[in-house]
Every structure is written in structure tokens, then in C-alpha cells.
Image: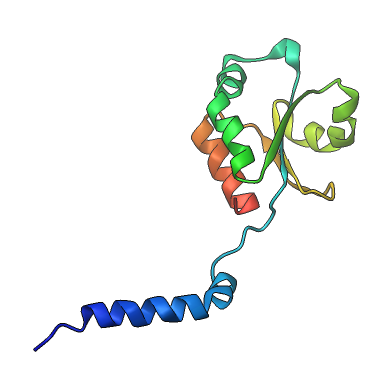
Length: 127
């Protein structure tokens, strides 16, 4: 008796080609592409933990490939003024994840590790 494996693979491949757009709708879609990962800190009080996180350039640069953007702001910077209330709630250094429309999706104290940071970013943005 002949194996039906190759025939099965051909049929499945053909069905995948025909149903391509429908399959895309079934796959999980990112919740907040193009969001911003923002760290607000008091630069003159920078701790070794913040310095270590900031110096992991591979992780920060990899955010762009995940369709996310990033910025570090000093708490006294005019650019950080719009986040002052959120930073006041969580203290510095603060992590904010901001949607493209400016909505703050999440704000909290900055985690101490890149793994912790990555878990938060992934859970909030879906990216």
C-alpha cells in the first residue's frame, strides 16, 4: 500500500495557498504596533540598574524590528512634561508605554532587568 503522506502535503499546501488571507485573520494580531516605550528618569540620579538597562543597545535597537519605538527622557525635560502625572504616580525611573495616538497604555516603575522589561512590553503591546 502506498503512503498518502506526499499527497496529503500537496493538498494541505494547496489549501493554504487558497486560504492565505483567511489564515492571516486567524493568527493573533499585535495589539499596539508602533507604540512607544518611554523611560523617564532623573538623569543626575541615574542608578547602576538604569545604566545597565540603557546600555543594552541590542535590546533597544531590536524594538524597531518589533514595530516599537523608544526614548529616554530626563524628568525635567520639556518632552517629559506630558507624562509628569504618570511619572509622579510611579516615581522615577518610570516606564511608560504610549500608543501612537498619545494614550498611555501602561505606566509603572522601571523593572530592574531586561527580561522584566521585555515581559511588560510584550504583554502590553502584543509585540
